Image (tube, rainbow, N blue to C red; front, side, top):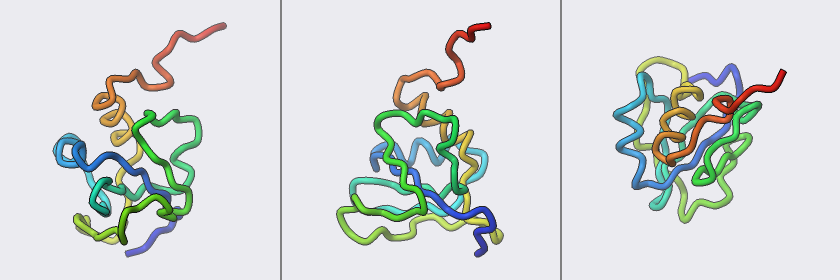
Length: 108
């Protein structure tokens, strides 16, 4: 696999993983460590997005909080390891019951 955009990781509680998987149009590499599923996204996918509080965002895909060494549980077809961050973000907002950061009122 190649990672032309660099990699970050988005950790979510493992209990939400299967539901998220079924809601996404494309799923990249996903790792599991027992209590979390770690979704690989392009680097800087946290720019201008307020990820829900149940998410742990890891720049560089360095996993410090893992209970054990994460194991690959999903590998996409093709050469690109990423889950598209916007659909993942929207699915996580829905699962967390929070509105996406850009859905608030705009001021002129």
